[in-house]
Length: 231
Ligand code: ADP
Ligand code: MG
Image (tube, rainbow, N blue to C red; front, side, top):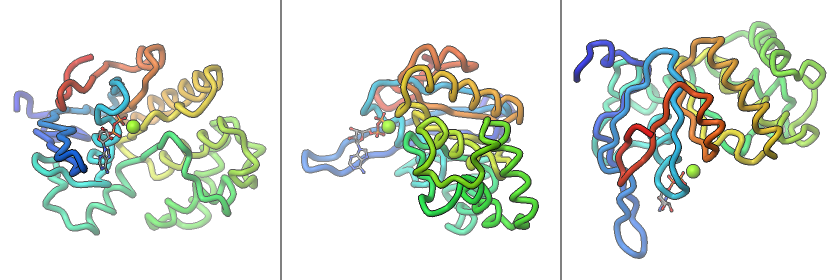
């Protein structure tokens, strides 16, 4: 560890390994991935399909555990934490945006942004105010009461981004967040995502295939033979 600040960075991966068992044998996807995501830094993860971007983001988001190595969130080794503690960190410290919005279809846009806040102990009233403020900032001031099925793809993804930011996370992980949108909408939603992340000082790791979107971020990393290298 070269830098003391790295020890308490929002996110640090140290020699992370992950392999999957397949019919053809073991598939080693991550073979010692290292990364420091500093406070407020926005990093693009640009690598071809099938190289392990989603695997890496799921490990960083504490949705899975590495086979070896460690994920540190604000200096805490996540691997030695209980499932309850990992869930609490996911709720309060990490926001996650998927390629497909994964909103709850039977709830309104506002409710989708309110629910994770209430799960984290925020009052209904405060959660609702925060949800409306966020949705308004994403141009959805007229859409609070719409269910996801009544929203366009771009609007759905904006709600998903608002939801990920609702609990004021210090880390945002996004897995090809505009990959399902047409080019023009993707560029707009992506710029709004980065604007919100920068505005709130959130550190972000964003997987994308698109070099133009990647160029909007602070730096690029890529996956090579299961390791992260400067892109
Ligand atoms: P990317 O997001 O860069 O497309 P993934 O992390 O989804 O890559 O996948 C990396 C590799 O691991 C791919 O070859 C994929 O088929 C394989 N893989 C991903 N998840 C599983 C799993 N649960 N079981 C077996 N193989 C998997
Ligand atoms: Mg993927």
